[in-house]
Every structure is written in C-alpha cells, then in structure tokens.
Amino acid sequence: MAEIYDLHCHSTASDGALSPTELIKRAHEQGVTSLALTDHDTTAGLAEARAAAAASGIKLISGIELSTSWHDKCFHIVGLGINPDYGPLAQATQNLQTVRLERAEKIAQKLEKKRIPGAFEAVKRAAGDSMITRTHFADFLLSQHHVSTQQEAFDRYLARGKPAYVSTPWAELEQAINWITESGGIAVLAHPLRYKLTANWMKRLLTAFKEAGGQGIEVVTSRISADEIKLVAGYAARFELAGSAGSDFHNPENQWVELGRLAPLPPHIKPVWELLEVQG
Ligand code: AMP
Ligand code: MN
Ligand code: MN
Ligand code: MN
Image 1 (cartoon, rainbow, N blue to C red):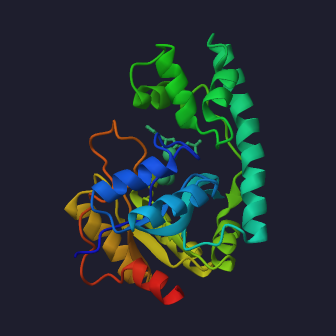
Image 2: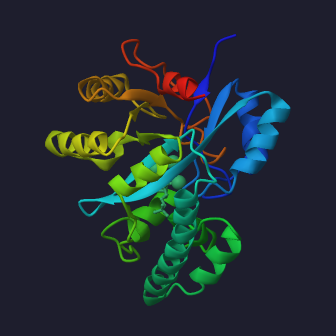
C-alpha cells in the first residue's frame, strides 16, 4: 500500500476544529498512513493523538508549529519527531501560553476601541485550556456578525497593519530551531511562500535557517501550484534541505484543504520522512 504522509495539521489544542481523536479518524479515512500533529506552540494534543493513532494503525509523528521572530517578521517553524517532554521545549510552550494570553487581552482592548466589546472573555471561553490564536478572534468576529468570513476578519481587523493587530514577542528563529533539534526533532520551514519574501530575503532567511540547524522546508502544501512547488524545490536543492509535505489542515469546512490531499514531492528532493526514519 502506498504511504501517504501529511506532516502539518492542527487540532483543538490550538486553532483546529477537530479534537486529536477526530483528526486521526479523518486522516485514517483519507488514507493517510503517517500524520504529524503540529499545533501552534503546543504539544498538548499529542498524547490523545498517540492513543487514537495506535487504535487506527496510523503512524503519529510528534510535532509542533512554533511561532518565531526574525527581522521583525513572524515565521512558522514546524518541528517533526520532537520530544514534547524535553525540558526547554516544554518550558517554552508554557511561556508561549502566557504570551498568547497577554496578546489576546491586547487584541481585545483594540477591538473594544472599535466598539467591539467582550472578545477576551469569548475567546478565552472558546479556547479553554488550548492556545488562544487569532483564529479564535476571527471566529468571535464572525459569530457577532462583524464580518462574514474568517478571511474578512483578518483583512479588516487581525492582520498586520490592521486595527486589532498586536505585535508579539515570539522566540527568536534560531532559539526555536534549537529547542526542536535539541529535543531530537527536525526543524522545517513551514509554508515558505506565505511570507511574501523577495528572492533576496528568502535567500537570507534560508541561510540563517540552515546555519541554525534547520533541515527541512515544506515543498508541498495545500493549494500550491506546480510552478510554486518547482520554486520551493529549487530552494530545497540549493540549500540542501529535505522536502516536507503538509496540508496545514484546520477545519473540515474548508473544502480546499484536506488531510493527505497533497501533490507528490518532486523526485529529486530528499523526503524529510527519510530523516525521521533514520532518527527512529
Ligand atoms: P496566530 O498564531 O494566533 O497569530 O494565528 C495565526 C493563525 O491564524 C494561522 O495559523 C492561520 O490559521 C490563521 N490565519 C492567519 N492569517 C490568516 C488569514 N489571512 N486568513 C485566515 N486565517 C488566517
Ligand atoms: Mn492556524
Ligand atoms: Mn503556519
Ligand atoms: Mn499550521
């Protein structure tokens, strides 16, 4: 049977709509054979996912998607095959929960200035013990009919440069890569084309990423064109990075993104899962 890898997705431990158990079930239904759960800044969903994966025969790769800062911009680094019990990583996720809670309070204050009260209480209630993300704010704005789509919530309020945007002190890129690699994992640059970098900045980013110990880049993601795959595969080859494939699945309602529904990695690219298998 063909192996189907999906090495990037979210559960209710961060801003995904499905619980880890529901996510594993859906991945299994979609034919995924190896899944990495990569919630934003948390590993809290992994234990439940592991139990569900064992029951359905899926191979679960312990993952995380860390928010990082580099040159004043936010970059997402996926960690694959991490050890969630590694002290500095566990400490970092705990700190990030506080960072996110404090940011949420500031976002809510900014929304209040726009005469949208009650956001902090609502997102705290919705997130429960999970990481509070801007997606929770988007859902709140949607539920209160301030916007008619999640995208509009980002475009009008939550995106950088918009009235409720709060710049956040994420970990430095190099620091986050260290947490991942020192815990036994592989650091992968998530969705490289989403940062809208010039070729020159992309080169600088990948140089810094590689120097800090980064080993992979997401060559295949959802809704990526054949030309874009070629472009990223070129970066992978040039910087000797392994290629990863991940849907970044959040929500079954988004019909454009499905678990495991991904284009194949170009044949000349070393798959990141070969590094994971070596790692054991
Ligand atoms: P945060 O990490 O709290 O800043 O939230 C980032 C999350 O918000 C991302 O992982 C996406 O799931 C979501 N997001 C960011 N930008 C957009 C956008 N323009 N439209 C829809 N969702 C977005
Ligand atoms: Mn997200
Ligand atoms: Mn991301
Ligand atoms: Mn993601």
